[in-house]
Image (cartoon, rainbow, N blue to C red; front, top):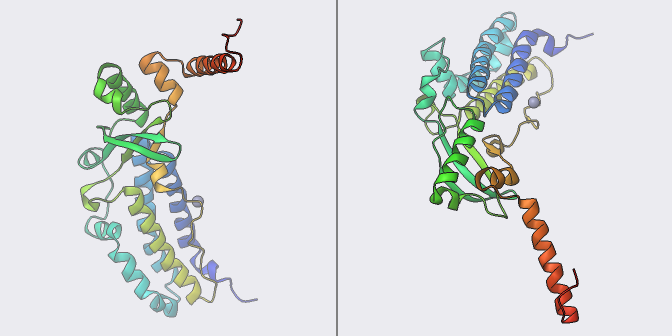
Length: 256
Ligand SMILES: [Zn+2]
């Protein structure tokens, strides 16, 4: 029986699989600064080892090693690997996120963004805490309340994680790109060893715009900010409408 092509690069594939797990941890913890940074740093530590382990795995497979040169070059030109080549023990410290990470409040109507406004979300602050601050501002400031949700919309906090090394790019994007390029190298390796290409589609990835957004309850907002019970408002509205309908039909106000 011929060797399974994967068996020669099992250690590399395993580390790549670990990177995949860290990516989902980054997504799941996007609104919790420390947890996000821990997951990001775990990803960085794991992904930088993949080409190192791969070169080791391929020591006795010179032809395959040669066949993946182009893909390896491409990986090394990737933004994250460029940084890692300059600074081998690169990880993202607490303070560096403060320089470029941004926040905003959104007002959403269903899945549609109705209004966005910058709102300072501190890089050490969980989105839930930023949201509490936002509500407090709305309680005291007519301008902020005015751009907040109405009876057709609901609030959300949107944030991004950026550092100067990858200017203008969300760290989650940078990580996904590094994962994909690493996967392309591994896939080319498996093919060179006589196997099938790896599946790089990553259908389990969450929509980045939705990961960056944390939505909150419209009802809770109205009650918490203005003491307004939307359910009761709705009941009153329905009752008034029923009243008007009876009146229109009979020409008389309804006997209550
Ligand atoms: Zn997945």
